[in-house]
Image 1 (cartoon, helix red, strand yellow):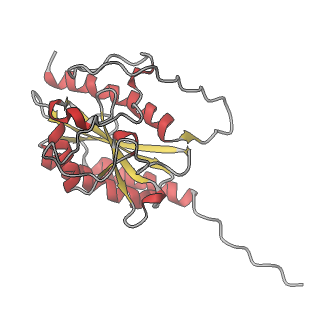
Image 2 (cartoon, rainbow, N blue to C red; image 1 turned 90 degrees about the horizontal axis):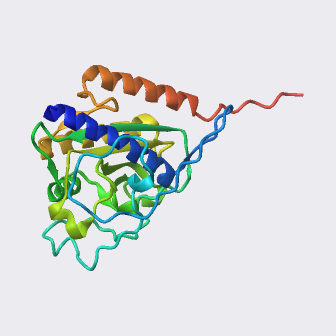
Image 3 (spheres, rainbow, N blue to C red; image 1 turned 120 degrees about the vertical axis):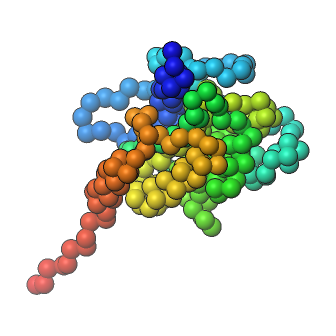
Length: 248
């Protein structure tokens, strides 16, 4: 099997992680029809093992991002990495509302025959303004208003998805996932315009390839299509205009 085929299989696992993120970062708003299947609760987190391409869809809840994993007393400064400004149990980047109705995702994937290294991801995240926080993943926050929650977040596609700073030097992953959950603290289009250049810059810093949610190289046509979708989303979620009171 080619390296690209292996990479595509690995990125498929990111779908599971995004489902886990949906459960952990918020709950989708109930649809008008049909019944939403409740997500399976994650079991105990397995012992850490060397990164391998994930198993196929349909496994149990082990892929869920582990919550509150301890640093075991090791700081990023002691690792020679930038201080991301949050502890393992931080609520920095937690969504204030548990409801959402749309998610937009992008990936930065390693090139064929290569991997993304944990310490490089941390340094690149710091350079692009991401902060380490809730669920042990990275977030872009509204400047001056972190309480509004994440504009978007970044996780590894390798289970459990979070970043363990105690073993970050040993971490390797085929790709990282960026996900924008709507509604966000900004309009959908503004949030996208924050995420896209960050993902592209991360790709440059890590020497990776930016992929869309279908695991294809992100091109101008796809970018334009996403922008159109998010403009439509913003129009649908605008506050209705105030009606004038009738004159008697």
